[in-house]
Image (cartoon, rainbow, N blue to C red):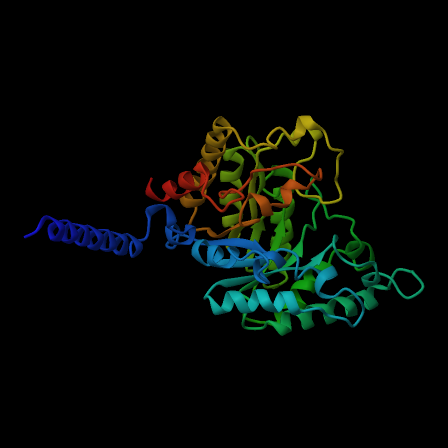
Length: 381
């Protein structure tokens, strides 16, 4: 064989080998692309909050990413009263419909959030045309119309609803919201009754922040027991899980999961992230959106990125928390992250606008952080 022909044959063979290697690699699923939902498929649902940018496709990467890692979605804002029912008799369903359609099409559970809340509710809900507060009966009529309309629209398509959100004060007493002021304590009972009437098969949840802490925990337990004693259908309790690097303690979380599990309900972590910024020096712990503070450089230390040492601390914190979720997987039915990656987290702008937070498992480029791998590893321990 001539040397030129030999060289040509070798080059052709080498090219063939490269093509075969590429094909083999392309049909393999890299280990780091194992979805969160796959890792916890035998334990609990892994959910995520979604909004306009992810569902209406301004962010072209979002939908495939969501399908890969999550098997439950919660509407972050689209189903809150001010968005879905902004004016009397006017409902705006486009984004909510799109979220439900996306989830159902991809075999994902849908969580409706939220029917009754003191925040993000228009003033017209509580007032007549002259600005005076409605009577109890008038507000109950407004509430019933809203719940029957919204829940009824998605009957059979939404797995469960956060029926009442944040009805308690930090000491466990009832929050003095407009709902409480006008209707009385039984507004919670009425909301659950109306939701059950609208969709008897939907799971109905009470959702709140800081209810893992002792005082508020006792208030939540009392609230649920009172509803149960009246025969009100309550399917689950949502712990929001807006937590910090050092707070609450793992022992506190462990106790709350035990105590809430004894109510015979599903326990869900519904709005989960771990805040890495020094927020507690502002005496703000929880998720009361009316609390705000002025920008200070001292509470925005990671604007240029999260140092490796803090990445490891975050990974350790997530591992400790997820070890508890795995331990209590007979009680915990869902863990929902409040944002698909750091760039979408509400913690960038609350309680101080303009900060750079890094509270989730994926960075702003959709890349897994060390915390992602520490969470995956909890399924192997």
